[in-house]
Image (cartoon, rainbow, N blue to C red; front, side, top):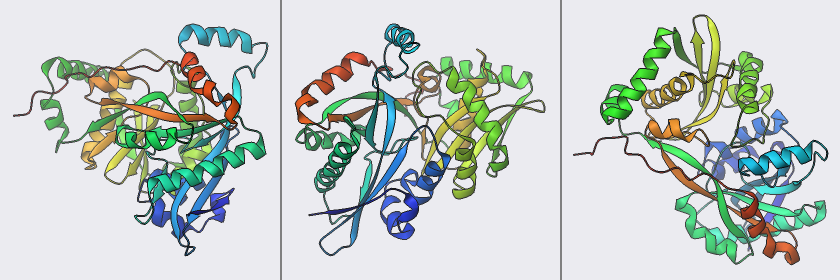
Amino acid sequence: MLTPEVFDSIEQVPRDAWNALALRQSRAMSWEFWRVVEAARMNDFRYFHVVFRNADARPVAVASFYSITTDIAIFAPAPLRMLLGAVRRVWPGFFKLRMLEWGTPITLSSPPFARDDSVRDDEVIEAMHEVLRGTARRQGQLLLVVRDFEPSQQGLRGRFARLGYHWTDSLPNTYLELRWRSVDDYLGSMRSYYRSKVLKHLKRNREAGVRHELVRDFAALAPVLQAQWMVVHEHAKEFQREVLTPALYAGLAEELSGDAMVLLFHRGEQLVGHALLLRDGDMLRWLYVGREVSAHDSLYLYVAFSVVQTAIELGARRLEMGLTTYDIKLDLGAEAVPVRVALRAAWGLINPFVGLGYQLLNKVPSPGARQVFKARS
């Protein structure tokens, strides 16, 4: 039986004990990453961290969760979003709930916990469920959300179902498996249609004087980068929730030095955009993108291609390209991977209606596969 120890700040958790487990799973679960996220003071997040101990009082698993006010129709189709927008001009909090989420708020870690080999997944899940339900009842939250689960974690579905959770769709993630030694090899492996499309847009940007550079010491640029991110955020159509702060950019540069980096995009001497990246083992994560102005042009494709190029040059084996803007990412060879979340009410009486209600309010895209690359001989 696991005994949970709950902390309301990562600063209270012994760093070495946490990282000894968390880094088995992801850099985005590390003590340093959580310290940055907490210090960024985004939205109305309130964070909690759990260390599970075995009968010998030895730490054997770690997990984090948080409370956040979230739109329960966060992935609503356009007509419903328009209707909700009209209602919220009169009633701003309509269909918004303060809920508990188990996971990481600004990236994806599947599964949302790390453990050593002496304990099983179901032991962690059952113990964490009791922590979540107890916290929700004390604090008055209605909904529990466990995120995120990619196909490799499909086997956990039954464990959550036995605890009353509904398994439902979230926005797909995108990945590019990197098997090329150079960007020329990557381009050469493309079918002619996709290669010519990419080269056409790259030419337009180069003729416009666009160039990029990789920068690891970017703390001083944090206010500028956050302002660029806000331009993209305010025009986002698929998904809006967390609002980044300059402190997040500065914290990543300072706390995760060497692993966090930005690609800066210049047109002449003007900084016109950026991509925020995080090295996570043999994977490179593309976390966010920002622009000086919102425009329908070729810059985003140039940004996305430059992220691929950088990942190849850094020797990453896999590139996580993130949620939304699927068409461009798929044109570059990324694969859309389905993501699931587990939902349940903190109180049993209304729990049967949670899954159906969520599915009625939300519709996520299902991007199809594209044959971007030539058949491998």
